[in-house]
Length: 119
Length: 111
Image 1 (cartoon, rainbow over the protein chains, first blue to last red):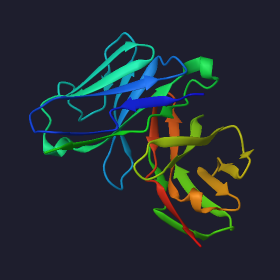
Image 2 (cartoon, chains in turn orange, yellow):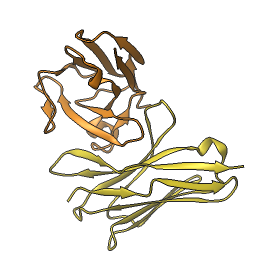
Image 3 (tube, helix red, strand yellow):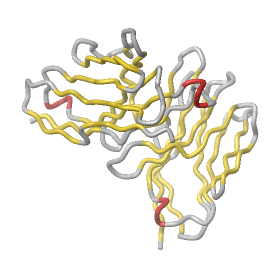
Image 4 (cartoon, rainbow over the protein chains, first blue to last red):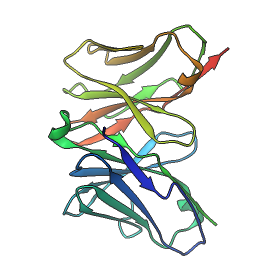
């Protein structure tokens, strides 16, 4: 149980285009999902916390107009990188928390990640 | 404070035990996690411990928590080649409602 998927697993796009990444909880409902960014050989950096039905909470230094997050249902959150530039190239990982139904509302289960390359 | 620190590298001979260490700074009640990341993949939850516990064992994995020293360790018994990965410890901070990750420890298995 507690499987989280991401789509696509990798994407290459031209500079200036927008890219949407989906994060789905496959066998549980997630009231909260998280979006992280990971640079090569570095740890994960939290970008934003996404709550179903409400606006995402962004970490300091993360541009909310650049990284649009939508959490329209209890099993799906999307991250859209708008007007992508080469410096946005990174590994984006989402996680989802099943909440109290999972026994430990703080535990997060991670997706496999999406590698974005902006040319 | 929210710093979580780990040593960057660990090499262990196949069949030996691996001990990966982590220190954290927040002394509040908290959950502490160990995640495994293989190359190009997401994070796999290995185990977690609540801060009122001293130890948790799950098959080959043993987590030890020293609250006084704010030190967390993950012991992998009978280390195998499939254990090669980066291991992250992470702390859940109540109030902040987010995970703070360590830098990750790259475990290399020597045949």
